[in-house]
Image (cartoon, rainbow, N blue to C red):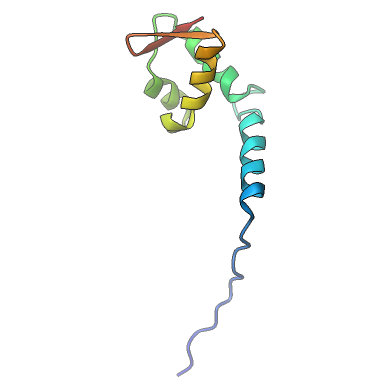
Length: 92
């Protein structure tokens, strides 16, 4: 009996630079929810919850893992667009 032949082509391995470039484009691209970027969407969610909202709650609303938005949240804090108090985020 012969061994089965592979029918699928091997996946093309992309250079690290190409992968990083794709990630940057994806990060800057508008999200599915309208024409907002990730940071804009985060700000909109925080503004819709002026009583404060946690990072996991923001991520849940966006349908992403909270670790995927931590950099954006940090940048928004640094820019003064949002503020954090007792583990909750508020409009800046």
